[in-house]
Every structure is written in C-alpha cells, then in structure tokens.
Image 1 (cartoon, helix red, strand yellow):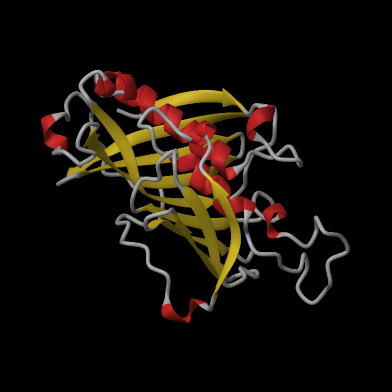
Image 2: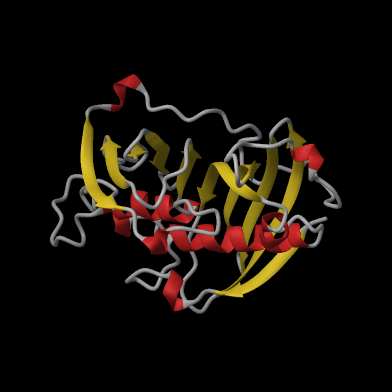
Length: 264
C-alpha cells in the first residue's frame, strides 16, 4: 500500500528565503513514515508501549527542488520490505509539476532497555510492500569518507541541548541534517566570480535553488550529556562532493555527503 499525506509547507520549516529546509523535509518524511506505520500497529507510539522504537540508519536524497512556504505538496511513502535487521522505506515529495525530491531509507527497531537492534520479523505485520525504489539507488551501501577527500576542517563544536532529542532520548536524525546544512563550507556564488556579500559566499543558499544529492549514515546515538563536533572535507563546487563527519564525546556518530548537480 502506498501512503500519502498532503502538506502545506509551514513557515517554521523554512529558511530566510522561505524555502523548505532539508531538516524540515526530514521531519515531514519522518511524520509520514510514522502515520503509515500506525496503520499496521507499528507506529512510533505503538512500539514505545512495547519498549521498542524505530531508528533511522541510512538515508539517500535526490532533490530537484525544495518547495516554498505556502506550497501544497504530497508526501508519498511505501515499504520496500525487510532484510535481516533492516526495513526499507521509500519517499517521494510531489509538487504541482511532478517529483520535487525522493528519498530511500533503512530503518531498524531497537529495544529501549538494551539499545540493541531486534529482529524486524518479530514485529513486522500488516504493511504491504512494493518493489519500486524512489531513488536511483536500490541499495544503500555503507558511507565512507574517501582518503582523497582532503583535510578535515572543523566547522562547529557545541553541547547537545534538550530540544535536539526525540522520544528515544537521543539526538533526532533531522538535527544531524540541520548541522550538516548549517555548516556547508563557503564557496563562490558563481564560478570564477567573487561573492559580493557574506550571505552570498555561503553554500547554504545553494540547496533548494539547484538539484543536489545528499546521503547520511547514522552510526551511533548521541546522548543528552555529550558534545558534538562537525568536520567537513572538501568544498562542493558545482558538480562536486563534500563529506561530513559528526562526532560526539565518545565516537563518530554520523557521516554524510553532499553532491551538487550540474544543470543540463
């Protein structure tokens, strides 16, 4: 079964250009996934009552455009089945012109007491599956930072705040996405032309206006008492890729990549 939510993009999920942010998009997708899972008694609240919780492991986005505040869009999602510990879920963000963005995801169910993954098949019931893959990647491999990605540049360091946590008492996936896009390395607004302002010199204005690809892998949870460091590798000039490593007090929590796409 395909599940759909119709959403009018709210201001509080948008940036200063009134464009939906990537962390806002992640929140919308997460909400629709929860709604769909609830129809099979496998929603977030239903699992919490059993001492279990859904946790995201990997996400891959192909973004053609990010919609503006006030636009009405449709989030379309479906299950692509399970394999071992993983459940596969696909998403499409549809606007009045077609597909604005797609996303492929891997999820696990964890035991809240042990913080360990449990067998999906013990909880999987009632959700029809479809083989269709929303993105060009039918398999999401482990994300690694290449050796030739360049030297790490520390973009930010800060403590974890209560507002960053979700009902699993660890940092929500959308927060990591926010940290990546808040810390995209600066680049020239136009190749070969110097930026004319501080705002123009930062790549955070780039997403939404041009197509891009974004991948993120969640390696371990970040807890309330920890601090976070965001490191970037490379500058994603048009047609290029930069990588990110987000570390908590104990270890590497997340790796991510951002790839700008040259318009044809």
